[in-house]
Length: 238
Image (cartoon, rainbow, N blue to C red; front, side, top):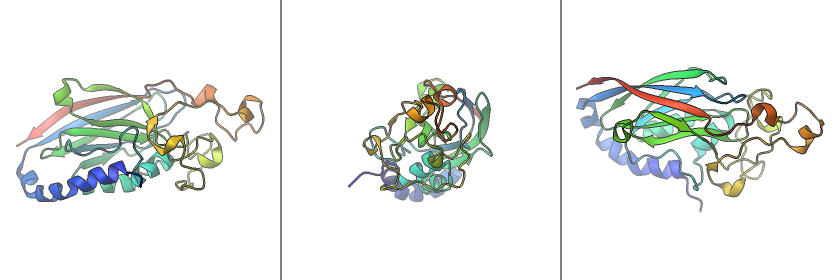
């Protein structure tokens, strides 16, 4: 049986989160401003998700199978299930109100209640099959810095066809596609999360055939990192 990293991590902390709700309401809360800058030439980020949570929560782990909520976000940019799973674990979650184009930035404010001092940031690179940016459970105060360069990960849940029929973002615009399930177009790359190798242009593009039906690496490839993330504490209440 494959391990669903997010599901197991969140399930293991749900009981503890429930027991601590009363204490969290009386504890201090820190407010963080999270700035996410898109460093790519031709990749749009889906509306980024920022979560403040306890150190025992992990949204993903390289070398492990993606959870279903993460798979949905990585393939379609849809955040509802991911937000619900994080909140079920006691996380405080905020989602940007729109996508982040190349060269632009998103600013998100999240209030971290109780002991939710770890920050996770997630978002899909929408002109891909299943690439996502991931800043995974960092503690800005502990590390003594608040600027992070973040790579793109491959969720390992969908074959990287680079074909518009499987891609929701521009120039494909297949915004109504639903998550590809195993047996249709996935999983691939061993079915585990790993650093993404980018867009390579399939032979159809390189030979000038079916132009527009596949991604063009000249526009949509990247070299890691794909995002710069700044985290700043802007307020605290006792």
